[in-house]
Length: 244
Image 1 (cartoon, rainbow, N blue to C red):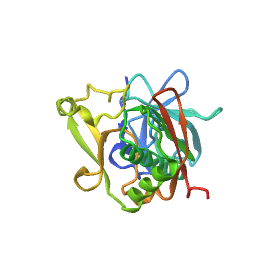
Image 2: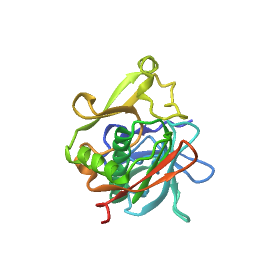
Image 3: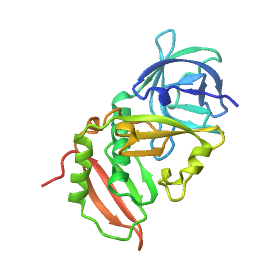
């Protein structure tokens, strides 16, 4: 099994990097020694973009997914792309405009879990709209939720990562907000995404990409709150100011 060093864990703003081909699987997926391309996980879509070869030609990448494990990242080329050689050096270019929107949206989802401190039953991050499902029975108003979200955005709190070991996570089960999904274990350490000075606003396990300050999220609003079952509500986050 090939392991790929995930550069995006250390620097989510790295839009270009160098990588060397370590394998091409039987479906044409390209594996590298390291990559800035995020693989689909935790509700966040994988990156798209292109690889630049030494002769200047391009290999368009249509999706990025995990292979047999989280440590194996597979870059899926678009149809009829050239196949690189094992050991070939490539320059990796992600679709930065798309990635940055996803980073802003993913951070907004974290802020929503602060405003609505209920167990999460599902989530999906999108370029223009994201959703977070909560195990909650009481009704709430999308205007007031939007106002609280924008207070957190406008306060421009720092967003950063911290690492704890698995025993620390077991000792602090409240860090896990998801009702049904536990963070992957076995590597010995867990990555936390923290918001606010000394993580005063929030801290929760997450392997996705986020902006470095809440102010970068920009204007967002709750477009719709849907009742999904007796004790489940779906919140849809959208970019821009709330329509009048």
